[in-house]
Amino acid sequence: MRALLLLGLVGFAAQLVDGSLGMAYGVTSTTLLLAIGTNPAAASATVHLAEIGTTLASGISHWRFGNIDWKVVGKIGVPGAIGAFAGATFLSSLSTEVAAPVMSLILLTLGVYILVRFTAYGLPRGNLGKPLRKRFLAPLGLVAGFVDSTGGGGWGPVGTPAILASGRLAPRKVIGSIDASEFLVAIAASVGFLVGIGSENIDFAWVAVLLAGGVIAAPIAAWLVRHIPPRILGSAVGGLIILTNVRTLLRSDWIDASGGVQTVAFLAIAILWAGAITYSVREYRKDKANESVDAYEAELRKEEPTASA
Image (cartoon, rainbow, N blue to C red; front, side, top):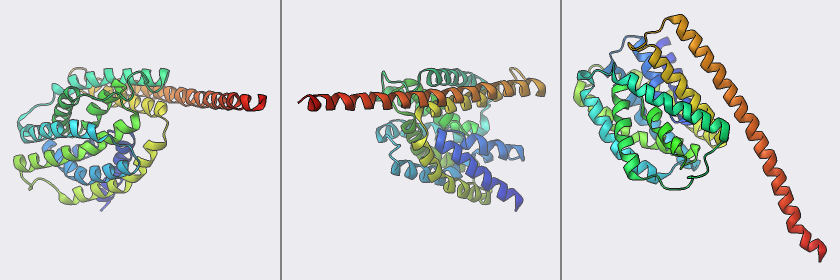
Protein backbone atom coordinates (compact mmCIF):
# COMPACT_ATOMS: atom_id res chain seq x y z
CA MET A 1 0.00 0.00 0.00
CA ARG A 2 2.84 2.39 0.85
CA ALA A 3 4.49 1.62 -2.48
CA LEU A 4 1.26 2.42 -4.36
CA LEU A 5 0.81 5.67 -2.40
CA LEU A 6 4.40 6.65 -3.23
CA LEU A 7 3.82 5.89 -6.90
CA GLY A 8 0.69 8.06 -6.84
CA LEU A 9 2.64 10.98 -5.36
CA VAL A 10 5.39 10.46 -7.93
CA GLY A 11 2.79 10.46 -10.72
CA PHE A 12 1.33 13.71 -9.36
CA ALA A 13 4.69 15.44 -8.99
CA ALA A 14 5.98 14.17 -12.33
CA GLN A 15 2.90 15.41 -14.21
CA LEU A 16 3.00 18.76 -12.39
CA VAL A 17 6.55 19.27 -13.64
CA ASP A 18 5.84 17.81 -17.08
CA GLY A 19 2.72 19.89 -17.63
CA SER A 20 4.46 23.07 -16.47
CA LEU A 21 7.80 22.59 -18.23
CA GLY A 22 7.02 20.16 -21.03
CA MET A 23 9.22 17.33 -19.75
CA ALA A 24 10.25 14.97 -16.93
CA TYR A 25 7.19 12.74 -16.36
CA GLY A 26 8.80 9.71 -17.94
CA VAL A 27 12.25 10.42 -16.55
CA THR A 28 10.97 10.81 -12.98
CA SER A 29 8.62 7.82 -13.03
CA THR A 30 11.01 5.47 -14.84
CA THR A 31 13.83 6.32 -12.45
CA LEU A 32 11.72 5.21 -9.49
CA LEU A 33 10.62 1.99 -11.19
CA LEU A 34 14.21 1.09 -12.07
CA ALA A 35 15.31 1.88 -8.51
CA ILE A 36 12.97 -0.78 -7.13
CA GLY A 37 14.23 -3.41 -9.56
CA THR A 38 11.88 -3.25 -12.55
CA ASN A 39 13.56 -4.25 -15.82
CA PRO A 40 13.96 -1.38 -18.33
CA ALA A 41 11.40 -2.61 -20.87
CA ALA A 42 8.72 -3.21 -18.23
CA ALA A 43 9.47 0.13 -16.54
CA SER A 44 9.15 2.04 -19.80
CA ALA A 45 6.00 0.10 -20.72
CA THR A 46 4.40 0.89 -17.35
CA VAL A 47 5.15 4.59 -17.67
CA HIS A 48 3.91 4.80 -21.27
CA LEU A 49 0.66 3.00 -20.47
CA ALA A 50 0.07 5.50 -17.66
CA GLU A 51 0.98 8.34 -20.01
CA ILE A 52 -1.90 7.48 -22.32
CA GLY A 53 -4.20 8.83 -19.63
CA THR A 54 -1.98 11.61 -18.27
CA THR A 55 -1.15 13.02 -21.70
CA LEU A 56 -4.82 12.97 -22.70
CA ALA A 57 -5.75 14.86 -19.52
CA SER A 58 -2.82 17.22 -19.97
CA GLY A 59 -3.67 17.84 -23.63
CA ILE A 60 -7.30 18.66 -22.80
CA SER A 61 -6.20 20.99 -20.00
CA HIS A 62 -3.69 22.81 -22.22
CA TRP A 63 -6.33 23.09 -24.96
CA ARG A 64 -8.79 24.71 -22.56
CA PHE A 65 -6.13 27.25 -21.53
CA GLY A 66 -5.16 27.98 -25.15
CA ASN A 67 -1.65 26.54 -24.88
CA ILE A 68 -1.65 24.36 -28.03
CA ASP A 69 -0.60 24.94 -31.64
CA TRP A 70 -2.41 22.08 -33.41
CA LYS A 71 -0.29 22.40 -36.57
CA VAL A 72 2.81 21.65 -34.51
CA VAL A 73 1.03 18.72 -32.84
CA GLY A 74 0.24 17.16 -36.21
CA LYS A 75 3.68 17.72 -37.71
CA ILE A 76 5.61 16.29 -34.76
CA GLY A 77 3.14 13.81 -33.23
CA VAL A 78 2.79 11.33 -36.10
CA PRO A 79 6.57 10.94 -36.72
CA GLY A 80 6.96 10.76 -32.94
CA ALA A 81 4.53 7.86 -32.78
CA ILE A 82 6.44 6.01 -35.51
CA GLY A 83 9.73 6.52 -33.65
CA ALA A 84 8.17 5.46 -30.36
CA PHE A 85 6.79 2.22 -31.79
CA ALA A 86 10.15 1.38 -33.34
CA GLY A 87 12.01 2.12 -30.11
CA ALA A 88 9.60 0.09 -28.00
CA THR A 89 9.65 -3.03 -30.15
CA PHE A 90 13.46 -3.14 -30.23
CA LEU A 91 14.25 -1.99 -26.67
CA SER A 92 15.01 -5.48 -25.37
CA SER A 93 17.73 -5.96 -28.00
CA LEU A 94 19.15 -2.43 -27.95
CA SER A 95 21.83 -0.99 -25.69
CA THR A 96 21.35 2.65 -24.79
CA GLU A 97 24.55 2.86 -22.71
CA VAL A 98 26.40 4.63 -25.52
CA ALA A 99 23.45 6.52 -27.01
CA ALA A 100 22.29 8.03 -23.71
CA PRO A 101 25.50 10.00 -22.97
CA VAL A 102 25.68 11.30 -26.55
CA MET A 103 22.08 12.50 -26.41
CA SER A 104 22.64 13.97 -22.96
CA LEU A 105 25.60 15.97 -24.28
CA ILE A 106 23.45 17.38 -27.10
CA LEU A 107 20.62 18.19 -24.69
CA LEU A 108 23.05 19.78 -22.24
CA THR A 109 24.25 22.11 -25.00
CA LEU A 110 20.66 23.06 -25.82
CA GLY A 111 19.92 23.54 -22.12
CA VAL A 112 22.82 25.96 -21.68
CA TYR A 113 21.71 27.88 -24.77
CA ILE A 114 18.11 28.16 -23.53
CA LEU A 115 19.12 29.13 -19.99
CA VAL A 116 21.45 31.88 -21.24
CA ARG A 117 19.10 33.15 -23.94
CA PHE A 118 15.99 33.38 -21.77
CA THR A 119 17.78 34.62 -18.66
CA ALA A 120 19.79 37.30 -20.44
CA TYR A 121 17.38 38.34 -23.20
CA GLY A 122 13.93 37.01 -22.35
CA LEU A 123 11.51 35.67 -24.92
CA PRO A 124 13.07 35.47 -28.40
CA ARG A 125 11.26 37.98 -30.63
CA GLY A 126 12.91 37.80 -34.03
CA ASN A 127 11.20 34.64 -35.32
CA LEU A 128 8.20 34.51 -32.99
CA GLY A 129 5.06 33.76 -34.96
CA LYS A 130 6.84 32.27 -37.97
CA PRO A 131 5.61 28.72 -38.72
CA LEU A 132 7.68 25.71 -37.74
CA ARG A 133 8.41 23.66 -40.85
CA LYS A 134 7.59 19.99 -41.22
CA ARG A 135 11.15 19.26 -42.37
CA PHE A 136 12.29 20.39 -38.91
CA LEU A 137 9.49 18.88 -36.81
CA ALA A 138 9.23 15.46 -38.52
CA PRO A 139 12.86 14.33 -37.92
CA LEU A 140 12.72 15.85 -34.43
CA GLY A 141 9.58 13.84 -33.64
CA LEU A 142 11.07 10.63 -35.02
CA VAL A 143 14.22 10.94 -32.89
CA ALA A 144 12.36 12.13 -29.78
CA GLY A 145 9.85 9.28 -30.02
CA PHE A 146 12.58 6.67 -30.39
CA VAL A 147 14.57 8.08 -27.46
CA ASP A 148 11.40 8.30 -25.36
CA SER A 149 10.66 4.59 -25.75
CA THR A 150 14.20 3.28 -25.38
CA GLY A 151 15.04 5.54 -22.45
CA GLY A 152 11.73 5.47 -20.58
CA GLY A 153 11.41 9.22 -21.16
CA GLY A 154 12.75 11.80 -23.55
CA TRP A 155 9.87 13.20 -25.60
CA GLY A 156 9.88 16.43 -23.62
CA PRO A 157 13.64 16.73 -23.02
CA VAL A 158 14.34 16.27 -26.75
CA GLY A 159 11.35 18.09 -28.25
CA THR A 160 10.88 21.02 -25.86
CA PRO A 161 14.42 22.49 -25.97
CA ALA A 162 14.70 22.08 -29.75
CA ILE A 163 11.45 23.99 -30.40
CA LEU A 164 12.20 26.57 -27.70
CA ALA A 165 15.62 27.18 -29.25
CA SER A 166 13.98 28.04 -32.59
CA GLY A 167 12.32 31.03 -30.94
CA ARG A 168 9.26 30.63 -33.20
CA LEU A 169 6.71 29.60 -30.60
CA ALA A 170 5.91 31.05 -27.18
CA PRO A 171 7.12 28.78 -24.34
CA ARG A 172 3.63 28.01 -23.04
CA LYS A 173 2.55 26.89 -26.54
CA VAL A 174 5.72 24.81 -26.93
CA ILE A 175 4.91 23.01 -23.69
CA GLY A 176 1.21 22.59 -24.48
CA SER A 177 1.92 21.28 -27.99
CA ILE A 178 4.59 18.85 -26.79
CA ASP A 179 2.28 17.53 -24.06
CA ALA A 180 -0.64 17.12 -26.47
CA SER A 181 1.41 15.32 -29.13
CA GLU A 182 2.84 12.99 -26.49
CA PHE A 183 -0.57 11.28 -26.37
CA LEU A 184 0.16 9.78 -29.80
CA VAL A 185 3.66 8.81 -28.70
CA ALA A 186 2.37 7.09 -25.54
CA ILE A 187 -0.16 5.02 -27.50
CA ALA A 188 2.39 3.93 -30.11
CA ALA A 189 5.02 3.06 -27.49
CA SER A 190 2.50 1.08 -25.42
CA VAL A 191 1.42 -0.95 -28.47
CA GLY A 192 5.07 -1.57 -29.28
CA PHE A 193 5.82 -2.83 -25.77
CA LEU A 194 2.76 -5.08 -25.71
CA VAL A 195 3.93 -6.57 -29.00
CA GLY A 196 7.53 -6.85 -27.84
CA ILE A 197 7.30 -8.11 -24.26
CA GLY A 198 3.62 -8.94 -23.76
CA SER A 199 1.61 -7.91 -20.72
CA GLU A 200 2.89 -10.44 -18.17
CA ASN A 201 5.76 -8.21 -16.99
CA ILE A 202 3.58 -5.14 -16.52
CA ASP A 203 1.91 -4.38 -13.17
CA PHE A 204 -1.35 -2.68 -14.15
CA ALA A 205 -1.98 -1.57 -10.56
CA TRP A 206 1.16 0.57 -10.83
CA VAL A 207 -0.08 1.90 -14.16
CA ALA A 208 -3.41 2.89 -12.59
CA VAL A 209 -1.80 4.66 -9.62
CA LEU A 210 0.68 6.59 -11.76
CA LEU A 211 -2.20 7.54 -14.04
CA ALA A 212 -4.39 8.75 -11.16
CA GLY A 213 -1.66 11.00 -9.76
CA GLY A 214 -0.93 12.46 -13.18
CA VAL A 215 -4.57 13.12 -14.07
CA ILE A 216 -5.08 15.07 -10.82
CA ALA A 217 -2.02 17.22 -11.53
CA ALA A 218 -2.72 17.88 -15.25
CA PRO A 219 -5.17 20.83 -14.98
CA ILE A 220 -3.07 22.47 -12.25
CA ALA A 221 0.03 22.31 -14.45
CA ALA A 222 -1.85 23.70 -17.47
CA TRP A 223 -2.99 26.67 -15.36
CA LEU A 224 0.54 27.26 -14.07
CA VAL A 225 2.13 27.34 -17.52
CA ARG A 226 -0.34 30.02 -18.66
CA HIS A 227 0.48 32.28 -15.73
CA ILE A 228 4.24 31.86 -15.40
CA PRO A 229 6.03 34.62 -17.41
CA PRO A 230 7.90 33.23 -20.47
CA ARG A 231 11.26 34.64 -19.34
CA ILE A 232 11.05 32.86 -15.99
CA LEU A 233 9.64 29.70 -17.56
CA GLY A 234 12.51 29.60 -20.08
CA SER A 235 15.09 29.89 -17.31
CA ALA A 236 13.36 27.12 -15.36
CA VAL A 237 13.29 24.80 -18.39
CA GLY A 238 16.94 25.49 -19.22
CA GLY A 239 18.07 24.74 -15.68
CA LEU A 240 16.07 21.52 -15.54
CA ILE A 241 17.60 20.32 -18.83
CA ILE A 242 21.12 21.08 -17.58
CA LEU A 243 20.63 19.39 -14.22
CA THR A 244 19.01 16.28 -15.71
CA ASN A 245 21.64 15.71 -18.38
CA VAL A 246 24.67 16.53 -16.22
CA ARG A 247 23.36 13.85 -13.86
CA THR A 248 23.18 11.34 -16.74
CA LEU A 249 26.67 12.19 -17.96
CA LEU A 250 28.29 12.03 -14.52
CA ARG A 251 26.79 8.59 -13.93
CA SER A 252 27.61 7.24 -17.39
CA ASP A 253 30.53 4.93 -18.20
CA TRP A 254 32.19 7.89 -19.93
CA ILE A 255 32.82 9.72 -16.65
CA ASP A 256 31.63 7.53 -13.75
CA ALA A 257 32.13 10.37 -11.25
CA SER A 258 32.29 9.68 -7.53
CA GLY A 259 29.46 10.60 -5.21
CA GLY A 260 31.37 13.61 -3.91
CA VAL A 261 32.02 15.00 -7.38
CA GLN A 262 28.35 14.54 -8.28
CA THR A 263 27.22 16.34 -5.12
CA VAL A 264 29.50 19.33 -5.80
CA ALA A 265 28.35 19.49 -9.43
CA PHE A 266 24.66 19.35 -8.49
CA LEU A 267 25.08 22.06 -5.83
CA ALA A 268 26.93 24.31 -8.28
CA ILE A 269 24.20 23.86 -10.90
CA ALA A 270 21.46 24.44 -8.32
CA ILE A 271 23.08 27.71 -7.22
CA LEU A 272 23.52 28.84 -10.84
CA TRP A 273 19.95 27.84 -11.65
CA ALA A 274 18.52 29.70 -8.64
CA GLY A 275 20.57 32.76 -9.57
CA ALA A 276 19.29 32.64 -13.17
CA ILE A 277 15.66 32.40 -12.09
CA THR A 278 16.14 35.24 -9.58
CA TYR A 279 17.66 37.41 -12.29
CA SER A 280 14.83 36.53 -14.69
CA VAL A 281 12.23 37.49 -12.10
CA ARG A 282 13.97 40.82 -11.48
CA GLU A 283 14.28 41.60 -15.19
CA TYR A 284 10.67 40.57 -15.82
CA ARG A 285 9.46 42.98 -13.15
CA LYS A 286 11.65 45.72 -14.60
CA ASP A 287 10.24 45.08 -18.09
CA LYS A 288 6.66 45.17 -16.76
CA ALA A 289 7.37 48.46 -14.99
CA ASN A 290 8.81 49.92 -18.21
CA GLU A 291 5.78 48.69 -20.17
CA SER A 292 3.49 50.42 -17.68
CA VAL A 293 5.41 53.69 -18.05
CA ASP A 294 5.34 53.41 -21.86
CA ALA A 295 1.59 52.72 -21.82
CA TYR A 296 0.99 55.71 -19.54
CA GLU A 297 3.04 58.00 -21.79
CA ALA A 298 1.16 56.72 -24.86
CA GLU A 299 -2.14 57.57 -23.20
CA LEU A 300 -0.88 61.06 -22.42
CA ARG A 301 0.11 61.55 -26.07
CA LYS A 302 -3.38 60.49 -27.18
CA GLU A 303 -4.97 63.02 -24.85
CA GLU A 304 -2.71 65.96 -25.87
CA PRO A 305 -4.58 66.89 -29.12
CA THR A 306 -7.88 66.84 -27.28
CA ALA A 307 -6.50 69.07 -24.56
CA SER A 308 -5.12 71.52 -27.16
CA ALA A 309 -8.42 71.67 -28.99
